[in-house]
Image (cartoon, rainbow over all chains, first blue to last red; front, side):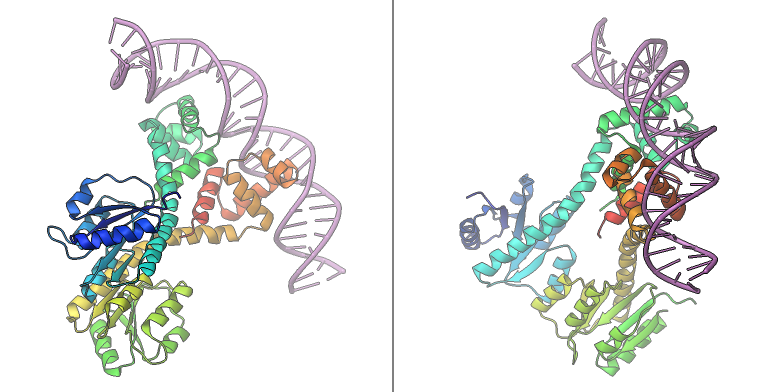
Length: 204
Length: 204
DNA sequence: TTTTTATTAGGTAAATCTACCTAGTCAGCA
DNA sequence: TGCTGACTAGGTAGATTTACCTAATAAAAA
């Protein structure tokens, strides 16, 4: 049976870790457990789909702090807070910080696993959209500075003549840049270039 | 002093309504109060910036239900739950349903007003992004069906010859459609058309 | 030091686009 | 019934692009 996804569990209680490990391993996930938030942060994760399960109250670093660290690193992993001691204010903060949900202990194994599956699925759907933007940015990153300038102006609908005036070079130079752009990006028209530039412009 | 934004308050407690009315009116907002969720839903709102403040526990329709009604209507208004009887599970549900935040009574007037301002500002920032997409969709909606087909293929980088084969019409017809598209959308190049089509494709 | 790459610029030819015409058919509307 | 708009298709002319080619200079990398 292939592994469904990676589950990262951070909790200072060894018993909780081993219990959750069993549950998710049995459910077909690859499980990684950490009893300190720092240990998790020091790990470099695969970019496979997965989910992070955190307790709120831990020594050294709280679940909320850890969550904020992750947000800074733009970590592409949904976060589920699994805790026995949440209050309303903390819940609001966790959710505002982007947690997928907050689950209060105790909860049935089935419901927990199902929630994790929901989190992973929903996160994957969103991630695939933003991955398009990132891919566009990556492709444009291969261009040289001048080429990028030409690309942006061309994607704005300017003709080679317009661009040559704007950049104070000859039309031929602009055409040479365009030709290089097409080769580097393996595209064949301004429309395809515009698509890339527009997608790359989108921040989120 | 110009009105800052519209505040819609739904609460079954008249005293709460009048108190909040005073607070936000004094803070420079235009305030609309409703003591039943249905009354609010029956109102058609201006598309000016604003914020909706809800209690959780109301007769006839709860704050959560009202919130879901709004989500269905894609109402462009941030929601703040302002309540004295929230628990963790309800908070999770409210936040999952898209509430900007949940505030527990009592809270200082200043903090309440500040939170509402944050909600409006953050919501406006996001809204302006999606407004771009909607604008693109609106523009493309002016096209006829055939024109839309040509627009999409052209934005994909296909030449007039390619498109004519794909749609089983002559190259001249494709050119005629293109010409109409340019006139209708007031644009002058494939790049600008591609920009519109790509933005319109984005769902959120 | 040699090689590669970026930037610049020109030649040529074919393909393509855009703009400006005409014009027939058909459907829906006033 | 006459008008409008959509869809179709053709003519012509000029602008533009794309795809080939060469080539000089400077900077960066091997």
